[in-house]
Picture 1: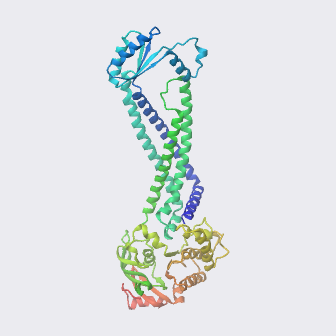
Picture 2: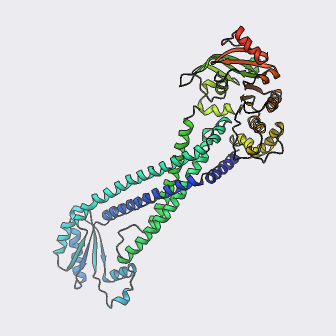
Length: 296
Length: 250
């Protein structure tokens, strides 16, 4: 029984798509455009999230040591730093380790570019709060044997609200776009229903349940919105990959942005789910409206 | 369960229906239709013939009163159960209501398709229904390729394929020539002889006179007469001399 119903639904959906190919194509185009913009919004949200998370995970100070610092002085410096209030974990990176890390993370062949190791030894330390980062850095700068102190400026904290703004506005924009996509599906399904109103009337007269009548239209809406989301996803992720290729080429070390692979995974899942949900809800609203227009 | 319920298929009790436009559809209608009855519903256009049929298959909702169809009160049935009621009622329309983009076979199978009937049942019942209405051999034709009478036969086959105990025919001969009309009514009689209760709304005097069956006259939403057998004029005269005015008989 269920198999026969499934067979009927699939056949009806296939016939609907075939019969309404023109309005279907319009629906597909509208869905692609809306989901394309929605995909771009999602990328902004991902990257804003990534940057905020990075900022909080990397409240750290890099202390570069002079080449003349010996083991005894190193121990003294480390002891002094540890005694400062607000200092968390600490890690010593030798000159050799720094060279190896750069070698692994650079797209250039360091062995060919440099004759001797130019990188200084350093101490990387975590700071417990944004407020203490600047006093700690100043204290360390004044110590003997320190060449340079690098840290994320406290002013970076001031741009956090901007990231939050981007996150929130992109989220709402994404919601609006999902609504627009749904609206276009509602209209396209409305056209499909109009062309099949006699069929629906007969279905009702011979005892088809509303759920039975609704399902082929829902499958049709889901087909178009899911196809639209696949096309939009392909376009957005390909564009992102291109942009990231350029960004990584010009700035090979710092990863400010979410990697292409991560974006593809998250974006693919989200756009697929949004596509299916929007198509399902849109067509459901459309059919229910039509069915409710009749008394029973 | 008493025999009374088994014998009575449809009972109208003081049924009223007023359309949103203010037009009265049914005015305190009481009527009883028994199992295996063949009833002609006659009356002028807009008198309430179609409305009387529509309330039986829950296409229109009544304002007051009750309608018992197959022992269930249709006026009280929740919307989600209406499809189940409709599966026990076949409906035939004046304009056939066939799907032009489907073959005859597909049109008839549609009824079983939409209730999720298994394939073997469809394959068994469709040819049998088409044979009963005299359309075997035309399974692969499309409705446009058939005559009006043949199209109405398809519509009847679709209505009876599920073996409904009740068949409602709303002006089924309205678009057909007299000769073809007789053929269609004979077909409905044949179905009735198999035990199906048939209600046929018509204003075709010749047809009513020819078959001498039970005739119910309805005008302005009120039942004027109800005769157990006779012709069109008999019913009209009964309505004029002994106006029934909404009392149940049979």
